[in-house]
Amino acid sequence: MSGLPVQVKNFLAEIDKSTSGIGPLTHFEKQTGLPRSYAVLGFVAVYFILIFLNFGGIGQLLSNIAGFLVPGYYSILALQTPDAKDDTEILTYWVVFAFLNVIEFWSKAILYWIPFYYLFKTIFLLYIGVPVTGGAQTIYKTVIKPITDQYVRPIDAKIGTTLGGYTSSSSGQNRFADRLHDSAEGVSTSVHI
Image 1 (cartoon, rainbow, N blue to C red):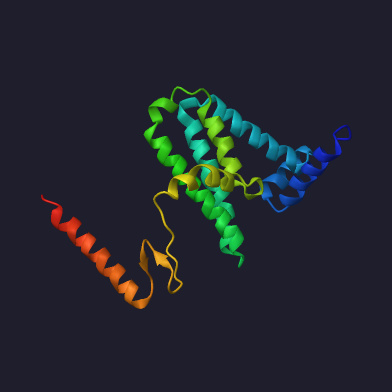
Image 2: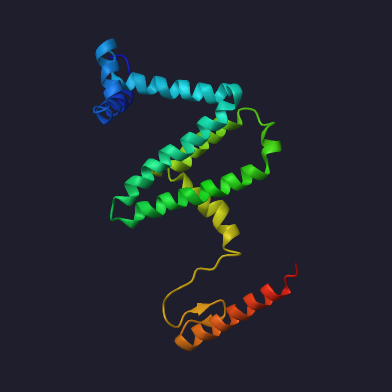
């Protein structure tokens, strides 16, 4: 390890430090005399090789696991902190993830022909799933937000602000509610079975 650059040594030391309480990695270190970081990096390499080779469709499974486990961990951390910033970051990830899954569902036949699709998908999911990269915010602001701004308007709870042309004052709320009720009534009576 003496011939490695300082940044690589620091990265490996950080992996060793953060995995110090994990039993199987400690056992690996005692049995082989190698640092725990080697086992972690070996696992990651095997994981990506399996996705790359995609034997028996395992690439899709492993890609989805990466898309759920990493952000799931960050979601649990976000729920345990009082800060709303991390909540917004992880919620943005889930919105981007849902958007990707909808697109993917409707384009499976096309995606089948893209070589190494699940490898690229896994890298993309890790890019948007790890908050440090800011990938979810970038994708949301550049791709999803321009689309959704055309169809989704936020509802503001402040008194006197506009909601789709109707004011949210107490009389305005009643007018808005009446208009919404009338629209729903019109839709439900126009459905013929």
